[in-house]
Length: 239
Image (cartoon, rainbow, N blue to C red; front, side, top):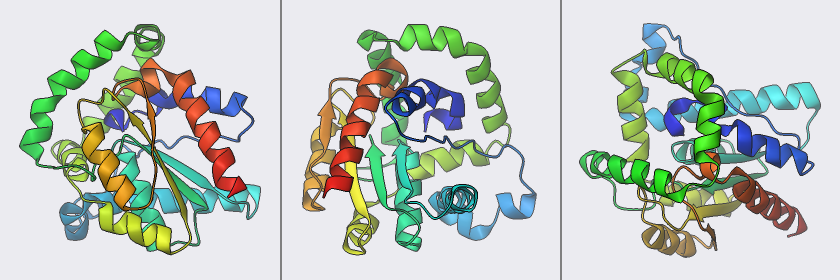
């Protein structure tokens, strides 16, 4: 999520790590051969490319740290990625936690594009730590985002298409396969309406945690989001 910028998740990752969990963030590749970049299947289903990266990184984690349970959390476009990964290989992940996921509400690239100003506006209004984190991470954020979008038009189209994907059926299959699932929503999310997302999650058997915040909550309220994730983690392992 957040334009594929890994450092945008540094604040929340640090809070989660301080809570006692080994935490790894995913850095999207910026250079790809054209035959990978424009594979016809990835053009039609770009979320599968992101899911493929999730699977590879999970296998690397298991190879490095042993066959311990791996729990994945995905924000925005990251949510369809981890859902698709768990749907493709249910044995790979112990759980998935969706942070403000697309794919649960009415899509449409035009509809999503018109919401971008509201997302930015709500982020500025929410205050929190957004300004502080943006200031301290400006260099990293700009550098990583420039690398992410250098593969225009595929990068921009990829984000739009993934945000427009429908994860309701895959999410139901994931839960029925034994992978645990949870969701954390921001009440003031201007991108993906929280009420509509909540109804879809309840239909899938998931009761979401709803936090005060906006779509940029990983940057604006990282401690709040991390506390919710730690609570989810404890509940998933207690169940």
